[in-house]
Amino acid sequence: MAPHADPTHPAPRPTVAEALETAVDLARLAPSVHNTQPWRFVLHGDRLELRADRGRQLAVLDPVGRALTESVGAALANARVALAASGWATAVRRCPDPRDPDLLAVLAPVEGAVDAALTALAGAVPDRRTNRRAFTAAELPDELLGELVAVAAEEGVQLIPVRSADHRRLVAALTQRADALQNADPAYRAELRRWTTRSPDSGDGVPPAVVPHVDGLQHDDLPLRDFDSTGTGELPPETRSTSGQTLVLLATPLDDRAAWLSAGEALERLLLVLTLHGWAASPLSSAVEVPVTRTQLRSALTWDAHPQMLLRIGRAAPTPAPPHRLRDDVVESGTRRPGLHVPHEPLEQPDPALLPDAGAPASRPVPDGRGGTTWA
Image 1 (tube, helix red, strand yellow):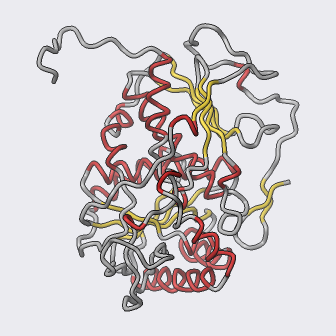
Image 2 (cartoon, one colour; image 1 turned 90 degrees about the horizontal axis):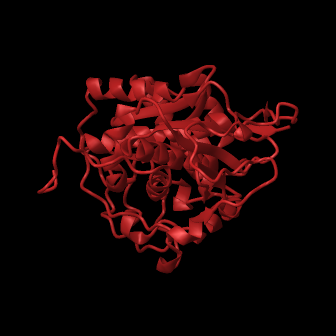
């Protein structure tokens, strides 16, 4: 508590405009695939738009934009946390306009009950890290695992612990196969190199400070992605990434943009909960990225749900913070657009004009036959 704070006279709640500014600041700290930060935030007087930045989409790794959308979902989760911590309830419209597929979400502070669970996560946002260090042998307690299952379910996402020896061996084998297939593709390696050799001034990408040095002597049965494309990784080479560690798989009933967005929201909430409890996590996404291994994961572990992210969880030494793009590079002020009303005063309820036009044709997901989707 501040030295002269008076608990009988709490600080006034931030205005809508102030709360949205804070929401942007926390949204910018979200994790993203290859730290591409593939988002743009548009601030209006009463709401915040989260938009995809297609110029930052990974054409080889993520041709349909699933990982990009999950990244924006993680930013959306942070924005929701920020608004809750500011004392505002939140109204969210996900994928609100089929005529504007890059508009992935609109959220607005509104009057109502504040989500205490989200409020509790605000302090973890600046401390959250993707940790690629060696994990200890400690396994996640069942009580905390149950909490993660419940948190994911609140976002409409299924969290599936990988427990049996057979399933652990399968996940290891599929991860090894996916890793080999990806690294055999020169285009994949070139794309990876572009995002691991960025100038420090760019504020994005995966720098040597946050990746293990690869010396060719490690043979993890659950390989992490090799981000050490120039042999300058600054973390110790030994990662001890094994199928015996705590592994969880996130899956969704559908496999469309809304589902990907929800998967990103659930992922970030899980990571923040783990951060609060002193646990580390890192993605093992190769087996979900390669269509053939994703299909096999689905057949073995999720049945009718679609795998979206595989995580390893454990205890580890701290890891440095990744770089972040400048605020001015990702945040812009809103301007009046046809069909979207921008009021002069903050709204207490979400603007009805944000709802999609009921007569507009909606795109729909179509299975691509390889465990993913295309759009028609």
